[in-house]
Image (tube, rainbow, N blue to C red; front, side):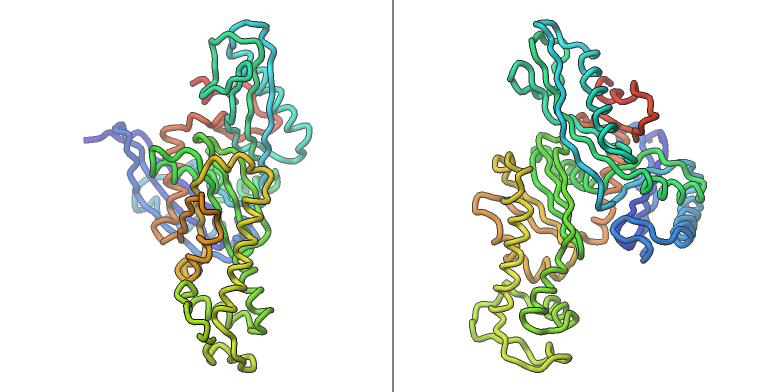
Length: 398
């Protein structure tokens, strides 16, 4: 019988809902789910809080139910956040070695300088993640930090993820009202990427695209490291707007036709839009293929903006796997081929829509991170200007 080590609580701030997951870690390297819940709430939009009282009541009610069920009182919580305006900064540092061995102090020197540089240029923000990206010794790329090797010149590239201090204060304020202290804040895009890595031992470099209603997120993982992320202030709503404008249809009618018509099965050029989609508009003959062309053109433009025209992804040509998550079940079903056709022939795109069970993947992946750690992460705790520098490197050196 396995011995219980500890219990952990995870809360994810998602768009218009909160996700709760309570787990326990055992000595047998197992993560057992004790309870899980999803609560809808309009006061959270794109990860941001708009009404403190409503969210506090919702968290407290769910927390009471979970604690009563598992007979345990939580004092700490791990937060997964899906803010859309976090910053991703790639920066490199170096150290001249003069043909000596690389020591831990050399790595500390680089990391301290880079962290100081970030804070000097990014006011009112806190570091929540730092990832090791590349290690280069005398122009030779290393797989790991080359401590103990001799060399003349060492460079170390890191990826920093930062959130605005006020956004963090708002989350902390809510949880403190619920008598919870924050143990860890984890980016949702990082947790979702980890869930893909955990599913496959051979998947180490890929691109992940999340397309929601009004915004999208792009995440690039290379060699098991979170290398780059970017947010876009548009989502699948632009497709609805295009069809509505070009075909002079109401947005409600466009949503309905996208829900009911499978555009991957339109082969006859003489298939027209049914009269029922013109309830608020004058009936006209509109070919379904014409609507498909409108959608296809916009999807192709979106993919081009994400990848082909993105100068930050120049190295991605070496990596073929692309995971696209659509936050709309009907788009995934009815526009699947349109999305897949928008990628180059040498890509390996995969289209997905989150089911109810998959909504818990970010929390489960975060539990894996807390329990097992991640070798590419250089910073396991939130860092502010007043943080103790020496704690930065705890996960690097073990």
